[in-house]
Length: 215
Image (tube, rainbow, N blue to C red; front, side, top):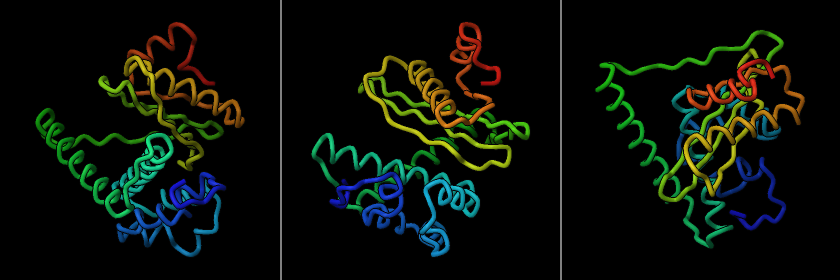
């Protein structure tokens, strides 16, 4: 949809599309790692695992943010018939990411006096861990949900998708949990531990349907 290729696939959109490649290669480290000759022929999960291992946490976050921007641009073209050239998309995304990092650091330092580091904890060997999360815009009633499935070694096995027609942040979190559980069941990613940072959603899910235990 971005380059006129009718047989759009996930790997084409995320890596092989010339538009995506132009956005990614605007950042030298992403060009060096994500388009390394030894990995550009691998499948989607193999490619993502390679990028996750070779990039620093900060650079991997930027990589995922740029992928989100490519997906957003794709949807703008499909649903709203609006388009932006790759170089402008890249500049806008980098600017937004820098702004987010600045304000996030400023807010964290003002409340704690130092940056807070959240570390992912691996599940027991033989289990998978599903981390879910979401965002919500009260004005547009649109949001995004995400879930990442990882094994005890931290290898990534899962994905995310945008949503519309939402009611509240809790609605997004609940849908994220539902989609993640369905994804785990459909792909036989069991047993698994579902983890969310939304305390109220966690309380309600645990109380009413028993989520919080092993899936």
